[in-house]
Image (cartoon, rainbow, N blue to C red; front, top):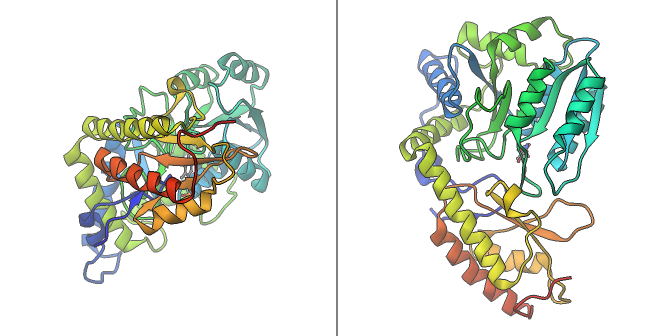
Length: 373
Ligand SMILES: *Cc1c(COP(=O)(O)O)cnc(C)c1O
């Protein structure tokens, strides 16, 4: 099979063995054989964040990563309570929009997108608003590469007895996470990112006791209710409605490969890939948006050069035709593109990419070294 190198922020490049795991005899997902597979998957997903299976559970949903954000926000808020969203990037902005769509009482705590959040400010808001029952933050703002200090934020959240929900979609199974030590009550991800599976399956991992407590909270969605899905899975070992069968076979294979590679070795590989990306960009004269000290080490957002011949679409198309996908940036009014260290790739792929990328710049008469604004 042709191997494409995806440098976009997900879906990620996958192994052929994961792709091929989807090709299985037709099966009804209500069969025992499939139920056993689902249980294996559920436990594996909790183990990735070192969760105690007596305390934490993974709840699976059919949908892209945003479904997990939607579910946590609409399901885990008690009546007459508020959500606090620490808003310092496009994904926390999306969480705010979800609150708006459901009409959930919330505080949108806007923070700069290129520096660490001010913990004093967060604590101030928690002090002044004892009705905040849920604090939401994005671990890694995939649009910019900012890594939020979840352990420190989580400690504050727990000091004020709120629930801490962290969007770990773009760090889960890449950067090591320890759900208890990192003060996380709920985290989430989708199969096409860190575990390097297929699109269409997402999961929320969190405290069983908190899910059980949410049984009495207002129900704001039918399909996307955390408690309903959790309870059904507990009783029957199945998702309430039709699961993405083939995607689940791929996810089970992806988890086998995850545990075979190992948490630390995989993180070292992502770091290697990221170093090769930033070195390649800097060598050409690109400026990277996020300072290294506060970056996730998974996404590099590079500013467009000051060159009339620079045309992202043309550069993208040149690379795409040769098997490499690059991706636009996500900061309003700032021209930038992203190169991401997700997926089943290694530094040799990045060296190969930069050969093609340099050709693309030359073919478009972009002057090297680049001029920056
Ligand atoms: C990818 C991603 C999501 C989910 O996006 P989908 O397009 O719905 O898969 C959510 N949060 C973060 C931080 C992400 O990187």
